[in-house]
Image (cartoon, helix red, strand yellow):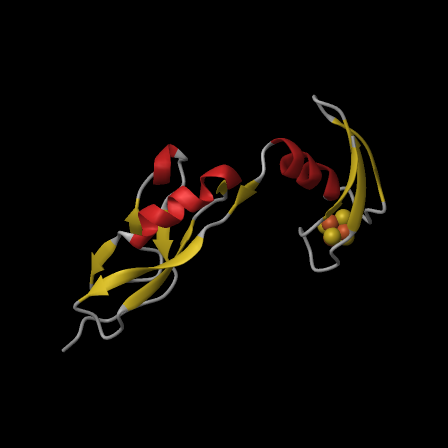
Length: 121
Ligand code: SF4
């Protein structure tokens, strides 16, 4: 099989021409560095995404706190993960780095806060 996958490892965004079979990547072209190979392998055989969203904060000065997974999860689970995240409610205060959900969908990824939300006075 052949295709073009845009490498997003860095802002150059090389359009990498890729040839692969059912087991491995056979050839790449138009990539400017060796980082493209593990990226395109992952995109073909095990695509993953970092989930970013917000959770409801109870008793805070803001109604929501932004969150993200601390590692990418399988792309096929992203929509299911978003459904879980939509149901999460946390109590203020929230601190950057607080784990608001552990082992999301059994992926090993934790959902962590990416902003502080103080408790309402
Ligand atoms: S192949 Fe290298 S230079 Fe090109 S986008 Fe990927 S990491 Fe950046």
